[in-house]
Image 1 (tube, rainbow over the protein chains, first blue to last red):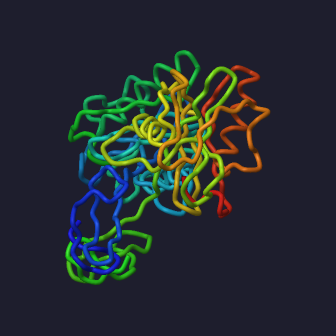
Image 2 (spheres, rainbow over the protein chains, first blue to last red):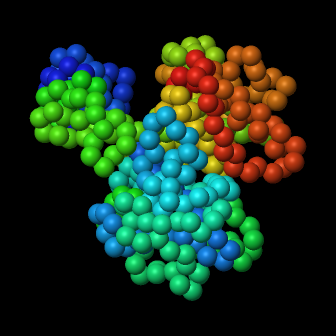
Image 3 (cartoon, rainbow over the protein chains, first blue to last red):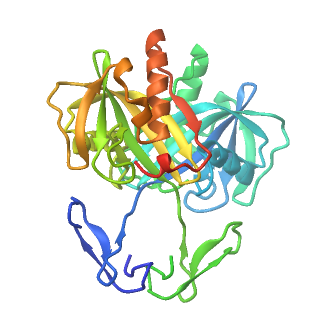
Length: 184
Length: 184
């Protein structure tokens, strides 16, 4: 950030009065520009004993497999964001069952919030950000070709929990910077 | 947003190619400036049969009671944010027990994420954003003087769940714009 989005003058990095963190502050109109983490919302869509994965058509991690997920937008709820991303990336018709994993990624200022969802039918197909969309049984999961560690974490919890038929909300964080986490 | 934070030139509102939403886009360097919801992280601190509330020393809702909570910062996890806010607003020494309520506020582009926490001792006191900090039993909760509907929602769930000694994660949303929700 170099310029003030309000008045167009230069900003400087400084700790505002009463604050304890450096912020971008406008030298002219004194607006303080806060920066905050972004939410990545998505789904783990389930059909019988299989789960739906998308093969990424975009960077980062082009060609790797992921769950449908993306940046939450303004003017929507978490559930709407997770559903919208599943439609955009997989044209998936689904119903959200519950919140499932909540994962902080402090190194890249993202919070993953992934929901369990029930596929309503098999009329899914690749959206513009996907090369392919497929159902995988546990044995078929391409563990070495998953796009992000958040996806690996979520799928591992799911197959463990399924054995117990008990799906608690899992909260976690991934601390170490790693290209796999870059973006959804 | 009027000016590009990268180059200082004027931005315009338009739908970028391949997108379906209006964004602020720089006329000069073509940077797309996305805007996303913010997370408000906080705690419901518990001591025996009582919960800790803070009386707000700042607007909005000056003088009303709330749980310690505030905007999540970059470079921290959700749990760190919830703990930090509890220290800043109540000098509370606590241990987080679990994620408890997740509430989307699409009208003001905020997501509340409140954690159950155990107060470790009674050495709490008002931080600079609080006029007072006190413990309340269920009968003492100032229901008519709570700062935000998210706080009312969370406290109601807590006292209901406590009767069953079962504390599931509650996900919800508050759709209607209401001054009570403005900010944490």
